[in-house]
Amino acid sequence: MEKIKQALERARNERAGGSGHYVDLDENDSPVKYSTTQAIKSSNKIMQESRISTALGHDNYTDAFNILGIQVIQRMEEHRWTTLAITSPTGGEGKTTAAINLAISIAKEVEYSVILVDANLRNPKVHEFFGVQPKYGLCDYLRSDIELSDVLYRPEEIEHFIILPGGVPLLNSSEMMGSPKMCGLVETLKDHYPKRIILFVLPPVLGTADAMSIAPCIDASLIVIEDDVTKESDLKQAVDILSVTNIIGTVLNKSIY
Image 1 (cartoon, rainbow, N blue to C red):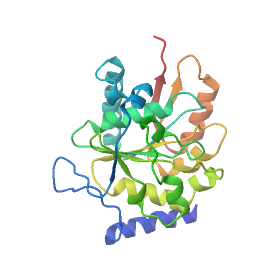
Image 2 (cartoon, one colour; image 1 turned 120 degrees about the horizontal axis):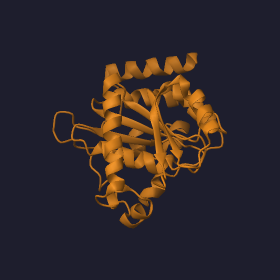
Image 3 (cartoon, rainbow, N blue to C red; image 1 turned 90 degrees about the horizontal axis):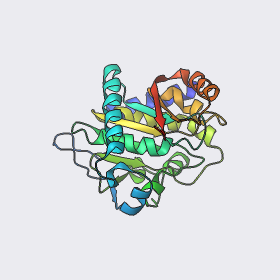
Image 4 (cartoon, rainbow, N blue to C red; image 1 turned 90 degrees about the vertical axis):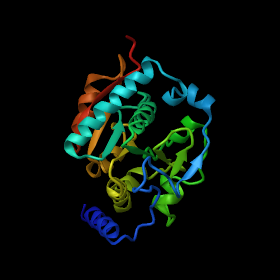
């Protein structure tokens, strides 16, 4: 824990001294402009198949995420939080789809920009929902000396939205998630620009220590549960594990009603 504190302090000092290399927005202009972030062309067909709202048009599905986005913004603003973890008790409950659509809905707000970080290092797949294969990802950043700007990508179809993909899967993901460099990354992202919300797609809470390792570094969390599938006992256990952060609510996914 002491190493993590040192990493956070170092990140703060670097920002104060202007020594960081992460520069992708022009804060003096409106709307937001991106300068160094790499642009990627997504597959509209794959986005449709993946139920990504920006490729589906306007319907009740996208409306639901737009409402969720406003609710999340209000809660985050109320507490001056900027980082939010999206997770679920177990696998297959739809947290990745929910996280992507939530990020897109927040990015629609003129004042906000969003970074979606694929922190499911054992099974990173956010990029698959867009039909792209980035060269580098979070795993590469954590294990090497590449610059943060090398792992940030901007889908051309979505304004104010940046993806930090997971990269190559890691077997020692729990160790990397709780590393000083990972917590330093969170601190760098969360304070670099105003009016930015960073969403982290985390692995399921139960079964691995990954979510528990990074949760103390993130302001708040949102739990995705699957209608008529997620067990009440699993949800209670997940809430207990995530008590080290601020749980802002749950999302009922795949509702049959």
